[in-house]
Length: 150
Image (cartoon, rainbow, N blue to C red; front, side):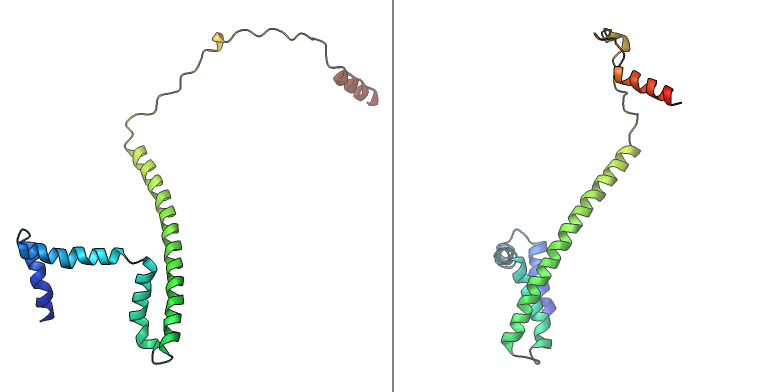
C-alpha cells in the first residue's frame, strides 16, 4: 500500500511530465522539498539525523533536555569532523588530479618539447682586461709565508 502511494506519483511525473498533475506534483514534492532543505544549515541536518537515531537509545536513560544537549554537542562535533575530512579530501583530490593530468599528458605527448633557443657564444661582446692587473698583495704575502715555513 505504501509502495503504491510512492510509486503512483513517481510514475505520473516520469511518464506524463507535461500534464497538469505532473507539474503540480513536481512543484509540491520536488521543488517544495528543495526549497525547504535550502533553508537549513548542514549542522541542523546532522542534528536531525542524530536526533532520530539516538533518541530511542538515550531517552529511556535520561531526561529529554539532557539527551537534547548531548545530541547538540555531538552534532557540532560531527560537523567539525566532516568539514575537516572534506577539506583534507579536497586537498588530496587536487594533488591526485594534477598527478593524473601530468601522466596522461606525458603519455599522449606526440613529440618532445622544442629545445630552447640559445644565443651564440660569439655574439657576446669581447671582455676588456681589468684596469688593475696587479696581483693581490695579500695572496703573495701568504705564499711567501708558507714558503718560509717549509
